[in-house]
Image (cartoon, rainbow, N blue to C red):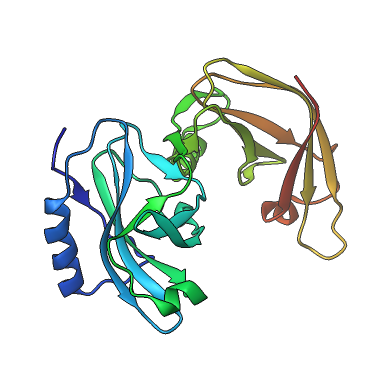
Length: 262
């Protein structure tokens, strides 16, 4: 157990320099936490005409970075729930191990709250916290047909990808690579499960932005995503597939649908 938490102030909340100093000071006073735990600790509570405004700190000792799902948070007094809200905590981004994030919560003023002064209050999670383990995807396998320039673009694409939840499988189509008389669509297969995953009968629909340009529907029989990483495969587009020019396809809208998943 440790008192050492890294204070991270999210851009979602605007704290003055003075407020940040107070938060930093209060953070040092908070009690230790057991490993693999998420906690919410109130710093202050102000009463306004239409709400109670609270500053709280969310702390984590979970080893992997986590997102918090939407869960109800309650303002309690003497053990009784006086007001509750369900804020979108996902906007905080990832909460890392031994990180502390201060946020502002506003509890609606109920008739009961308006008549009394809150004393001995607490701010608690009403439900058990569901922490979603996430990981940053890394390249596992890139088809050898991609050239050096294309591989660099692929690496940058994956690097900018947000962390994914554990046991996630998804596919995305990247921007078109132009090669003389044909185009290559890089298909990104994200697989954070512990086993390879195979997909069959994938429909790739490309809709060029030009007026009157032909819509392309291409069927892909089978692709496989390696376990615990990102697999990138090339989807070739030739004149046999579409009368649209490469220029028309360059900025096309691409959608993917799965016709037969195994």
